[in-house]
Image (cartoon, rainbow, N blue to C red; front, side):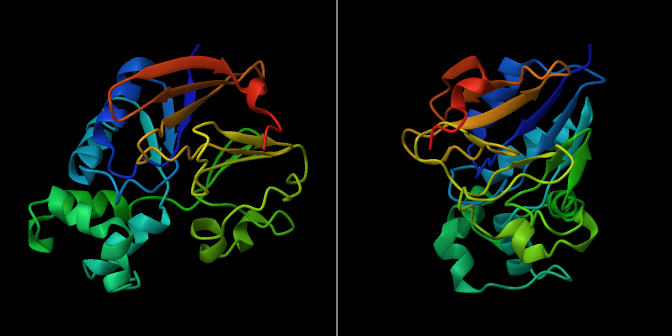
Amino acid sequence: MSRTFAVGDVHGCDVALETLLTTLDLREGESLVQLGDLCDRGPDTARAIDLLIALGEEIDLHVILGNHDEMFLGALGRPGFRNFGANWEAFGGKETLASYGGSPKDVPEEHLRFLESARTIVERGSDIFVHAMIEPALPLSEQEGHILRWEKLTYDEPPPPNGRRVVCGHTAQSSGEPRVWPGWCCIDTKVYAPDGWITALEISPDGNDRIWQANQRGDARGPFDLARFEDRG
C-alpha cells in the first residue's frame, strides 16, 4: 500500500533531511508533504533544496511555503514577495546565503522557482497541511497568508470542524517531540538546535499514525506511535 508522509521544518539542515529520507526509503507512487521553512538557520539550505528537487522526480512531492522561504524570496527581489531587509539575515538568512557562496546572484533560478511553486495549503483526506496554522472558524478558501505562515500556536486552538486535523510546523518544539492535541499535530521539532530533530509523520489509513525522526548528526529514531505524544504539553 502506498504511503503518505508529512515532514516538518528543515531549516537548512541537509544531513538531518537526507538521513530522514534514507530512513523512510520512499518509493515511486508514495507521497510526501513538506511543511515549509526549507531555508535559514541551518548550514546548507542549498543542498536541502537540491535533495527535495531530486526527490520530486521520484515521488509525489508537495512543498508548502513557510515564512522563512517567503523572506528568502523577498530578499532576492522575487515579484509578489515582501522584502524584510536586514531582518531576514538576522533570522537565519546569513547562513542561507553562505550555503550559496555568499552572494544572491549565485542562487540558482531553479531553486527560486521551486520555492515559488510552493503551495499554501495541501489537503489529503481529513488532513489539512499548512506551515503555521489555520483559523478553524474560517473556510480554507478564506484563510489569510499571515495566519498560514506566521502565526504561532497557543495550543488552545479548537479542532477544525467535521473531524478534520491540521498538520503543521512553524511553532518549534524544544522538547524534540511533536505536539499533539485534538484536531492538531505540530511536527516542527527544532532541527537546527543542538538537540533538535526533523520529524516525519506517517499517515496510516487505519489511523495508527507513526513518527520518524533524524538529526543533523546523522542519527535516526522511530517509528513511534503518534498516540504516545498526545496531550503531553
